[in-house]
Image (cartoon, rainbow, N blue to C red; front, side, top):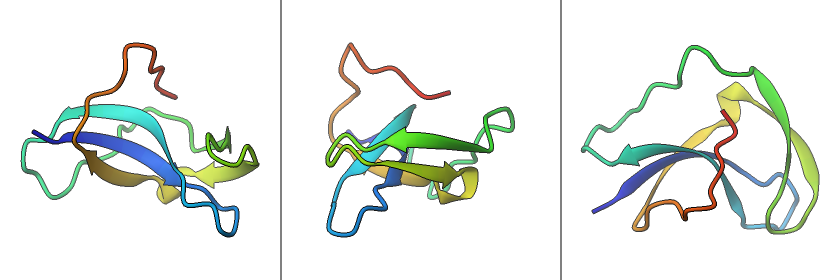
Length: 78
């Protein structure tokens, strides 16, 4: 079973980290998930890999499918 998330790829050259910002839920087979209408248009996000902070626009958010559900301490951005 796959789990769907929204997130950002780090903008630091050479950093491979994909930063998870929102858990969508168990993947139901849809190829596209629509972003919520009510959410910030941008954010400054600190990479959990390299620690650098970059500004991300709503349009830069990407969908990723992972095997594991979010850990209990996960806090979504929106």
